[in-house]
Image 1 (cartoon, helix red, strand yellow):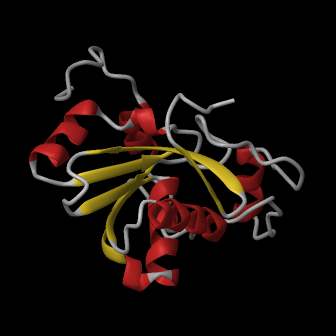
Image 2 (cartoon, helix red, strand yellow):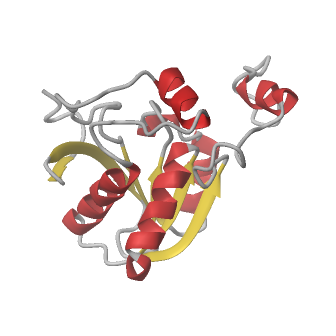
Length: 178
């Protein structure tokens, strides 16, 4: 089990692992990572800058990721196949939606008694953030959507050179400038 490794809350019927840092009385930022990316993938320098600016940070592992619960049952289509289906105009059947994942985030905030937070999401996390802002506008102070899209597959097509640049591992991963 994941008990004892980091705090866990049951929200929306799912056990979700999360971490908080900073002053609990400070303005909160909930940080939502992208597909298959655990909360530990947020760059330390980015987190340090937010903490130095006086924010409270709430990071979570989305369902099916990191130390959060894996969803059993239901459709779990391969990502590449689901993307191809979407591009061809077919409906994708999945065990849960981005709105379900937005409900997960609200459950974590509720457990921490946070009524309203800034939301920062990267990639799919940005899409979850958009769902949060649409469904729970009174809970979202601001939304910062990083490397994300609206979900329209034609609007989100990046140029191959841009994809290569963001997916390329830097020569020195510890150098935040490279």
